Amino acid sequence: MPQALVIGGSLGGLLAGNLLHSIGWNVKIFERVGDDLASRGAGIGTHEELFEIMHRVGVEIDASIGVHPESRTCVDRTGKVQHKMPRPRILSSWGRLYRALMDAFPAGDYHFDKSLVSFTDDGARITAMFADGGSAQGDLIIGADGIRSTVRAQILPDAQPQYAGYIAWRGLVPESALPAELHREIFAHNVVCYPDGDAMTMYAVPGPDNDVRPGHRAYNWVWYHPVAPGAALANVCTDATGHCHGTAIPPALIRPELIADMRANARRALAPQCVTVIECTAQPFFQAIFDLETPRMFAGRAAVLGDAAFVARPHVGMGVTKAALDAECLADALAATDDIDAALTRYHERQHLFGTRVIARARRVGAHLGAQATKPPETWTPEERHADPMRMMKESGARLRDIPELIEVVQANRGMSREHGGHGKYTGALLQP
Image 1: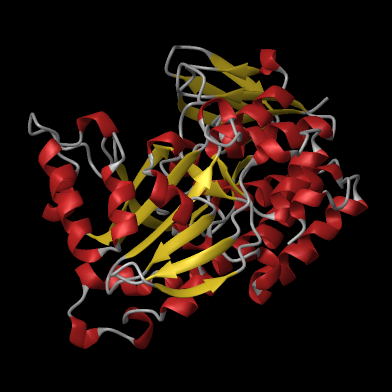
Image 2 (image 1 turned 135 degrees about the horizontal axis):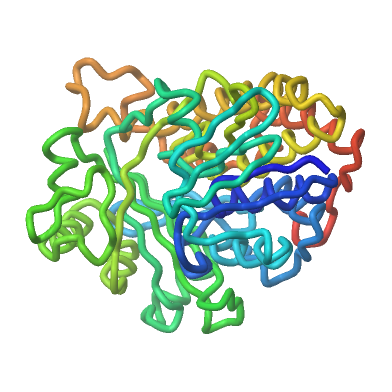
């Protein structure tokens, strides 16, 4: 039985592990963090294709998978509704999907506190070395270890993340913490606000322990705000002791004065509904926004997928779905032949094109945000000028089936799924518009 070593036990690693296990591979997943990840992460968008792939590996898709907003509603800076349109996507939480995929994978083959240091590849066998002195061998190593992938760093060292010029402030508010009047106005809707140079989205997600009962859910928000590269970005990533954490900082170490400044900026820039949600948030946090594009999906017997291969700005709402499609394409390529090298070539040919198109779309949708802090206004292209709110509503987080340049690639690639043992489409009621 062939054996795969999956580096990274987050959603991409679990999707790859479950799919390879379903085609008869022996799979070991190695996660560098030492404890369960279910409490991490925040709200995420989903796609029909993601649910189909989860269904394929035996995950039950029911009402607890997420929250289905009634509409996407755009408000201006005064709080007045500008536009409203249907929102035919289920919005879930990172922890809800992690728990479902974790429960589907054999517990004894998932290893915590295993940080990859390096690996060797002799053309037939992979040997992975870990920081604790342990090692593991397999026929294939898969880097599902995110934007700072150790696997990618070894096989594709020139592929480096590029800062996009803005950060995403984020937070989760318990449903019960929202003022009653505001709850009635916004909770059933995906509310967005697009003032010049900023973009904000808010929506309901499952609450603690993946609870979707009324009163027990949460309201997730993301505010994209320009921060110049260099000293300005370093400043927001510096804690109270003066230590700079690079381009990311643990939420608890964000300086209180930065959070106060963020709230003050929100009051100047955003609709009052958005401001109230931000002020109800106990611990806001942020992530710097990056682009990452790799020239190849594999080298030798090492492959990368998900954020280890491509990181697209979140406006496409496709991070987890892209990881699922990568994992499915890899599994189907391996199922089609006993020649691992030929399978990896096929995987690259099919999924690299999808990744490049996702990146291009995300850059275009977010161009006006990145330009604010990186280029003088007189040099901005038409795409880098403030986007029309209606266009942003339609293009941010659209369904795959509504994006012609992406769905044509997905449909071509997923033909392998039905050809080589995939379960076909999941047609549950939750996926209907």
